Length: 327
Image 1 (cartoon, rainbow, N blue to C red):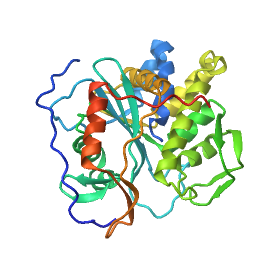
Image 2 (spheres, rainbow, N blue to C red; image 1 turned 60 degrees about the vertical axis):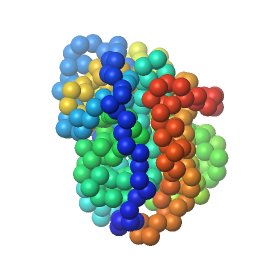
Image 3 (cartoon, rainbow, N blue to C red; image 1 turned 120 degrees about the horizontal axis):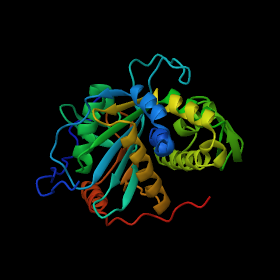
Image 4 (cartoon, rainbow, N blue to C red; image 1 turned 90 degrees about the vertical axis):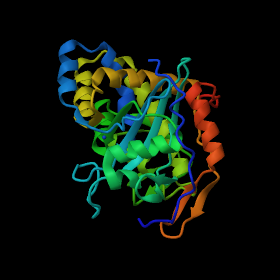
């Protein structure tokens, strides 16, 4: 991906006036780990020992509330993602989860093609930050873009998404057209279907069949998260020790988190995300979803003022989400 020239100047962080009160997927796996709250100590310790940690946080001055950055990592080499010549890893799904001081919680999908200023690199698409500098640079880039300090980083590889769904047997997903997408592997007829891990993974990755690209994918990701939570919350899973062990293994083995973010914190994050989705969805304001850059193809263009206002309302808890999807 080549540079697109100087990125629009972003507003500076406003952290100094805020006191501190307190690898889809991406959010995909961790949401279902809400069951960790009811696990026995032995299972919790076992799961905790399997989590990989990375020094991801920037050390920037704190902002109010608690903010999580959740990334779905396109790590090659696993069974769920076909080898396609891509080296290293990319972030295919990026979500921001924020619990405001007043108690309101918000889950926001950040389109991976959003044109941002990546520190030390200039104007690129958001997912390039992970390619350039891994989790630390992705965290710093998101902080500069949103004005919110990241307190916890959670990453999940695509293999984890597939394994998690297979651990609960299936999820129910709906689509409004027949799809046979070669790039993602998604093959679904119009309507709602119980699907296993492979098709669930394809569902959250697919975008090329959809003229709305990343925007439509955001909606499918949120639908997947909701369906997965419903499945995990069903008595057949919650009251089944075998299913719990499968969930713990599939989940924790695929997690990468920031230092100090263990299984209990992941569980708390899951509860926060569940609350956020129950209240409704938040959609980041976009000025042009098909902005033609000079060297990086089509990107998602945002307006500085709109982004500043949007994330300030997220930060202070005054943002009003849309009504929750009852479908």
